[in-house]
Length: 303
Image 1 (cartoon, rainbow, N blue to C red):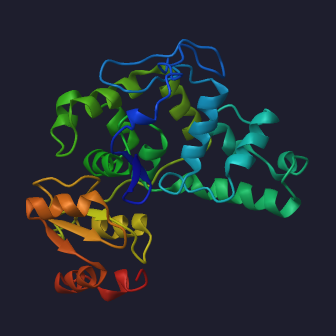
Image 2 (cartoon, rainbow, N blue to C red; image 1 turned 45 degrees about the horizontal axis):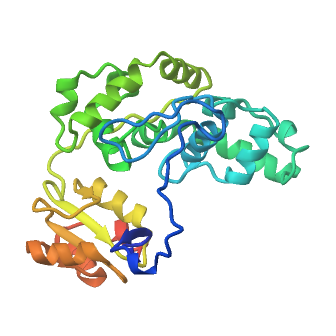
């Protein structure tokens, strides 16, 4: 029995053994990558297996898709079909190759016309100057999503500083634990990753350095969890809260100050209630922002 939790996450409630007829067998995980044949690796604390080959076509495909996603470099027009086309034509082998694409290379491909090819190249070129947090997220460092990428960007202020960060410096950040610190250090210690960063710099991809907060922010020290469907996109609400000094977490805990909820909020709302966390529906959330002296123009366009 599976139910929907939050917006998209399937939550397994329990099994139904009485429906089994005896023909079922144990599920045996694969030992090799079905795409490139590399031996899959599974770390002790992981529940999944990973292909370690960064040149594996499936790994490259997913890295390109993540790089182009909204929370990363936000490249409009580079979806799964377009990625499939440029890979099949061997026009790119990694994310840095995107920045050397020319419209005339794309026009002969399926799904491309002259205008769509120009638009995609323009969108790729525009992504050269994205905020540092988006760039860090786009790199696909294990355990580093949008929230942690924002913490790293604010603390180190440049990709160069982050690449030289020590374990103690990383662990000093509230929200960064040993797993994340180790993953960041391992990423920048990898020679192939360093080469990719150098290739990106050579292509003119220079993220905008994070600005250090000036003075006290309206939401300093407050942690929010967003659940359910609201009338504004969730990523925009996150950006709003972070820009005002707040933190956004993906799970409810005793450290959570407010849970902002919309329709179909799921189990997070129940947990917040059991922990005594303050709850804000959309109307109350807007009132809360006004009470905190946030400029109406910052959020009025969202709701």
